[in-house]
Amino acid sequence: MSYVQKLKCLLCGTEYKPKEIKYTCPQCGDEGILEIIYDYSKIKKIFTKEILKMKSEYSMWRYLPLLPVDDITKIGPSKVGWTPLYEVKRIREDLGMSNIWIKDDGRNPTASLKDRPSAIAVVKALELGEKMVTCASTGNAASSLAGASASVGLKSYIFVPQTAPSAKMVQLLVFGSVVFAVRGTYDQAFVLSIKASREFGWYNRNTAFNPYMVEGKKTVALEIIEQMDFQVPDYIFVPVGDGGIISGVAKAYKDMFSLGFIDHLPKLVAVQAEGCPPIVEAVNGDGLVRFVEPKTIADSIAVGIPRNRVMAVRDIKESKGFGMAVSDQEILEAIKYLGSKQGIFAEPAGSTAFAGMVKALKEGKISRKEKVVVLVTGNGLKDVESAKKAGGEVLVIDPNLKAVKEAMK
Ligand SMILES: *Cc1c(COP(=O)(O)O)cnc(C)c1O
Ligand SMILES: [Zn+2]
Image (cartoon, rainbow, N blue to C red; front, side, top):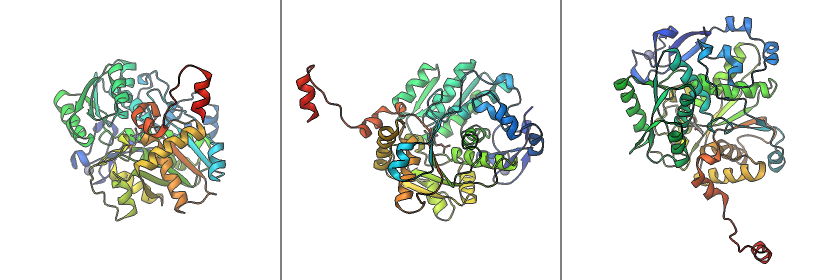
């Protein structure tokens, strides 16, 4: 059995027992997102820094006592997590920052951070005896759920906007999903997948609607804490769509704080595209999230109605962080910079947090001396069309040395 004590509604505060509820608060409806609360006094007895250091499991399951898993035999075979946290020496030199780290979560089985929550979704589905799963996604939640489902023999039914990058679509098909390419936005696909889930009885992994996804997303930061040897950075820059990853990062630090592994919390910076900044505007303004019509190249964060908005805005404000909006041009420049300076290949949403960090530095919102961690959340091969815009042109030549010499001029 897991150490989950209760599920608490973010809107009305009602608490539920773990087995009592599958998705959202019955009193508040689909907007009544639930937060997972653990019994830290019990976890403390079996999970110490010393025990952690001795563990030979190098994946997200390293932090099992802090995860909502009741039956460990239901964990899938794919290796998710324990991705590298790079010291990025060349970027440090170039920017004159001595304390910046980049976590490359594009190095997961289906090439995005979403493998973490999807691994949890599959465990929860199998624990409930489900045979079929579904989600709506801008692309990465979908491809990760499709891959994780295939690895354990679950059938997946996926809703994505018709405009999702083709590499993400191809992943779905190869993993054997039934793919519904919706003529509409992610926000519309989200509503449709919940309707289909109710109609056909499919287990639903949708961000925030499924209360366990933040628990998977938090493992990225549980790893960062350990990889930094329990030093806490001043700032963590996170790309934000629905707001699940940033709440996951907040949860990881709060978990580790509750266990006494760290003594304070970092400030969280939400980075969004200028063409879709509802969370950034809320945290920098009056705290209210106003829906927008998304217009950005960063498809993974093109979310007009952020589903985890209440938790995300709370977490960013509590951390004393702020929001940054960056242009598509800045996102493309960040792709090229991460690739050419450090050999890290990011998709547009994957480079967005770095673009936000560079901008915050330019605008004096952070200083060069501060300890900063930046998340890269998805691999560049996920969206080759955007990468082409960032990368520049090849030199087409005849097969002789003279042609090489001429082209080099
Ligand atoms: C999903 C995703 C995000 C945003 O995560 P949210 O939990 O929706 O805020 C950022 N980058 C990539 C690559 C993603 O797939
Ligand atoms: Zn409620």
